[in-house]
Length: 145
Image (cartoon, rainbow, N blue to C red):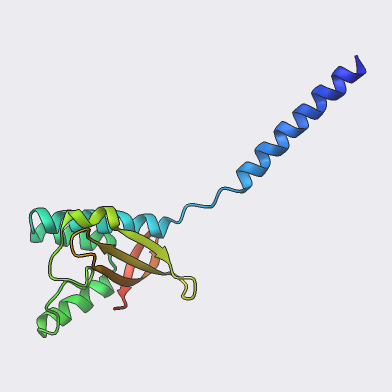
């Protein structure tokens, strides 16, 4: 009887211990990286399918700070910007979405490396973005190309 109790007790302790260890090993969700993935997926989709300026602007306002939007507008007004700053390109194609990668820069806080490419040309576009937290949400604060 004592052996069964001891065996059951040890089995219970091991179960709790293994559950606690597995719970601790899960990495926290990087909400800024999730936001960037959502932004680039929505933005590339709209640009490649419709090039609808109203939808593009709505997406930009949702995911970028007012400071960055003003910077882009100022560069556009001065005709110093002949490409899309978010994409580091003039256009986009949804075929690049499977190759979209968001990686946190290990050396610069709140900075991420965004890259995408395509299977045809094998070219990879790299974009460095800085994010900040506004309220409960993260937003793109600058594009550092």
